[in-house]
Length: 170
Image (cartoon, rainbow, N blue to C red; front, side, top):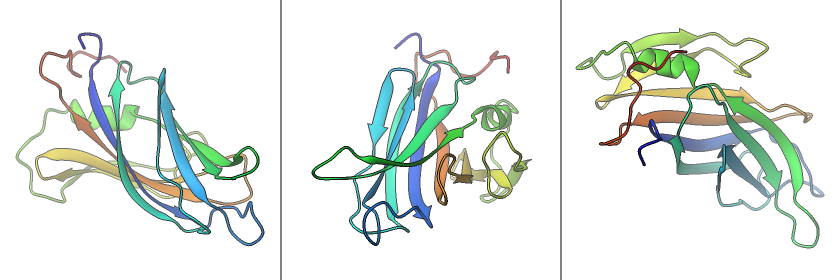
């Protein structure tokens, strides 16, 4: 445990206009991974606009390593089909955490991240103070696919006895 910085809750909320991989729909699920860790959501039958609302927790060793997210179509008799991918860049969120702010009113936006060609954001994303912690919700445009977006939210969890984020250079 001494080599991790902390935990990151990744809430996989929903998919928007995901690609059709079966006859009329898809059976999508999401896989996230960073380093050796790989976690996935359940699959939802015949739904191109799925509502997963699942929380996956990763242990973070390096905030410069992006979290890779991939969407697949579950197939029973053949390999699962890829339905696009995206990366979650932690650096803007970590910069927000390193400001050392606390006791803000719920809903207070502290940092805005503009979409660009490298971060995959569909629209502006904000770091928001909520119930004693910063969260960042983002809509990620999937790459390598004809259509699809995934709505995710991240939240940092400090772990007693771990290094934490103080002193981390971005």
